[in-house]
Image (cartoon, rainbow, N blue to C red; front, side):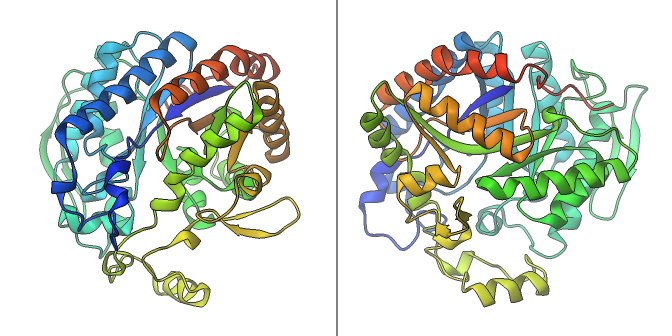
Amino acid sequence: MEVFHFTEQAYPDAWKHDLDSLRNTIPSSYCEPEKAREIYRNAQDGWLLCDELGINIAFNEHHSSATCLSASPEVTMSIMARMTNNVQILPIGFQIANRPNLVLLAEQIAMADVISGGRIQTGFVKGAPYELSPANSNPGRYLERFWEGVDLITKALSTHDGPFNYEGKHYHYRQVNVWPRAWQNPHPPVWIPAQSPGSTIEIARKGYNLAVFLAGRNLKKLMDLYKQETVAAGFPSPGPEKFGYLCLCAVAEDEAEAHRRAYDIHGYLRTTGIIAEAFVNPPGYQSPENNAKWLRKGQLRGRAGTFFPATKKDGTVINQAQASIEDLVDANIFFVGTPDQVYDQICEFNDHVGGVGNFVMMFDGGELPHADMIDSIRLFGDKVLPRLKDRYPNASVVQAAE
């Protein structure tokens, strides 16, 4: 089993203001550059500790947001490619449908892969609806642009016999010729997140790796569907290394202290849905079928904790933004407790869903003090991770796609 430490590098000092939205419209006057620098350096220090402990590192991309300062995953990817020596580096991921130059992104991925000695993995995300406005991106044909973009980037990274011209529906390039070529051949592993059966089927049919965020025990349904569709598409039956699960984690020597840390990290779930309603569902972003489903569930609103429902073991549906830590642990959204408790929770969940090879865990979030994050990571790396690797020895870091 592989574990990644993921952080959105949030700016919680801005949350104290009574704002209708923590994204898009929040003035940057609420951001002190000195504090932002501290947040970046704290995140990097945490990742450097991970490099010592064998915990891989992960980060993402958001814009105009006080809940995530990771506006340029290319910058973070390049910094960590040079500063670390051992672990995998996973931007999860690049919002490619909002980007004007995907060949440039392919070059940046290849360059970082070379600098790191072949430790880059790549994540491509469709991007949340509120990301379209900062990018001045058209929501129409959004999914078409995304999938064409994935194919273009992987072709650019894996073509090594000279330049090619590209004429697609949404992208047009001359003389695509990525130098340097990526360290990994034909290209670094590709992860694509999914929350729905439709996206899961498309990912499986294309042979990419499946990442699922905050699904809890519902992950099993998507994994089973992915396995079925992968084989139907002519690929080998997927092992645990093809699956990733993003969740939250808080570890301490004392159970009560672990729960206090978890409450601070839970600030991520309490704030991520605070979005001005105008940006929640731009026309054309969702299909008519999905819009009808959203309306039936009453999810078209700004403070959208119901964007992330979860199901407890007894079948009770909870709102992740408002749920207790105990309920989130029961639903396998959060793994919380002493090292022994966290180990047992992960094993029970992993055996239930059928084997996840990659856990992408938020050891940081909300207003958690830096020292508590460091202690939690160290405890996990020293007292949990070695036992997980012994129990699940066959799930290694996924290799570059064939």
